Amino acid sequence: MRALTPGAASVTGLVGEIVASVRDGGDAALAKYVERFDRPPAEPAPLPQDVRAGLEVAIANVRAVARAQVGSGTSVTLPQGHTVEIRELPVRRAAIYVPGGRNPYPSTVVMGVVTAQEAGVEEIVVCAPGMHPVIRGACELLGVTETYAMGGAHAIAALAHGTETIERVDVIAGPGGLWVQEAKRQVSGAVGIDGFLGPSDVVVCADGSVDRQLVLADLRAQAEHGEGTIVVLVSDDLALLDELHAELGVFETEAVAATVLAHDAADAIALSEAFAPEHLELVGPSMEALVDDIRCAGCTFLGTAGGTAFGDYVAGSNHSLPTGGGARFGSALGPRTFRRRMSVVRIGDAADALAGPGAAIATAEGFTEHARSMTLRQNGRP
Image (tube, rainbow, N blue to C red; front, top):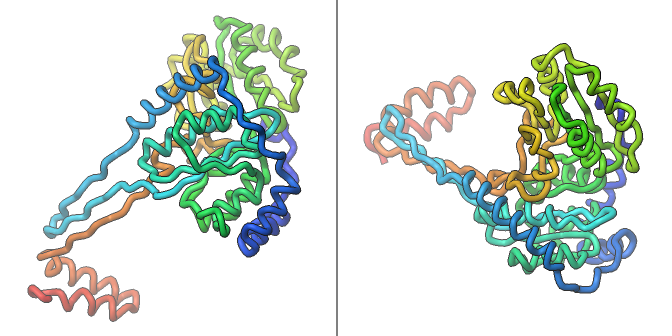
C-alpha cells in the first residue's frame, strides 16, 4: 500500500547546501533565502471570534492532556548503598515550525506551543512562512512573543545553528514538507527534533454495521492533506468495500486510496499493525473490541463518533504523529519531546563495594586508569 505513492525525489544535497550556507553565512545567507523562497509577511489582522473560540477549546484540551504526561523523576537506592536520581528537566529553548503550504495552520501552533509550555520550556519560538494573521493571532493567544516569518530548509538551519540575530534552539518540532523534514534530519546532531514527519495516512478498520457516509467523510477528510497521503479502508464486509471503492477513486488532491478485504476483524487488525498508520479508526463492534491488540498506531480513534479530524484540532491528543510506518517505534509529539533525563549519582560509602567489580571490568577493557580511579576510593578514601 505504501508503494501506491511514488517516493519523493531526494533533496538531500540541495538541503545540505542551504543548511551549510546559513550555518556559515548567518543573517546574510538567511536573508538571501528568505527573499528567494518565502512570501512577504502578512499584515497584522484581528483573530476572527469563531476561530479564537475554537482555538481556546483546542488549547484547553491539549494543555490538559500534555500536563498529565509530565513526570517529576525518581530516585533509586541500589544494594551497595548508593543512589541514582533520575531528574526530568525541560530544555531551555525550543522552536515550533508551522508550515505555510496552501493555508495557515493555527492548530499546529497550539499542538506545539502548548505542549512545550507544559513541558516547562522557558523560551518558545514560532517560525512560519509569511506569518499569516491567524498564525500570529494564535501566537498572541498563547503568549508567544518571539516569531519569525520564514520557512523552508533555511529556517531550520537558522534555528539549529543560530545567526547574528536568531539564537539557536535546543529542540525543533513541527510538520512541514520534504525540504523542511530533510533539513530537520540533517541538523538533528546539533539539536533535538521530534522526528521525520512525512506525508499523512489513515487506516479505517470497519465492519458491515457502520454508517457509510461517516466512513467516507473521514477518508476524504484525510485526503485533504494532499500529495503523498494514503487513505486505506479495511473491512471483512465486501459490500461495504464495493460501495465505497468507486467514491474513493478520485480526490481533488493527489492523495491515493486503497480498499482491502480482510478475512475477519482480527485479520484487519493484523494488516493495520503491519502498516503502522499515523491515524487508525476502529469502527463497528467487532473492530472496536480489538482495541487492546493495537500496538502500532500514532493515534487510535474508536467508534462511529471518533473521526480523526477531532484529533487534528480539539480532542486534546496531539496531531504531530509518526508517519511512514514510524508508529512501530515513534510516538506523538508530547512533553517528553521537550524534556530530557539526567542522572545524579551519589556513590558515598558504596565505593568500597563497587570499586572491585568496576575495576575488574575496566581492566578487562584495557582501561587501567579507570580501574585506578575507582580503587583509590576504597577504604574510606578520600
